[in-house]
Image 1 (cartoon, rainbow, N blue to C red):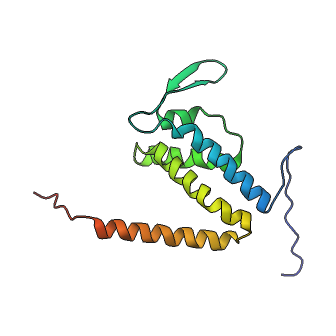
Image 2 (tube, rainbow, N blue to C red):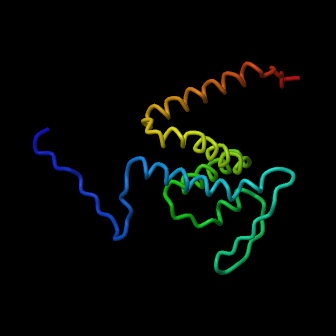
Length: 148
């Protein structure tokens, strides 16, 4: 592989190029902030949010609507908007729930990031926990015959 040149990355002026543990914690905090916005809209006692986008005012307690209207600049927090939109497109429901589940997972792993546990170890264990949860749901499930 002789003669290979390193890739050149061009960034806009003022682009944040921070890395490491501080950046991971910043990403987690940004995602938690988004999750906190929609958290109070969930459930039978869910509260409405008033969102002003510069031209019009929208009042809603629908997670999908709120996530569409939020103008989020943080790349990691935008990921939560993306998973919410994917959930809405695929299922049509559960947009707030996926944001809250992701936010909750991030909240639980934040202390491990702060202690310096490597991200690969964290994600391996998150995947193991997800597998255990799916296995438990399958174990508790009751078969249902839809043909009758």
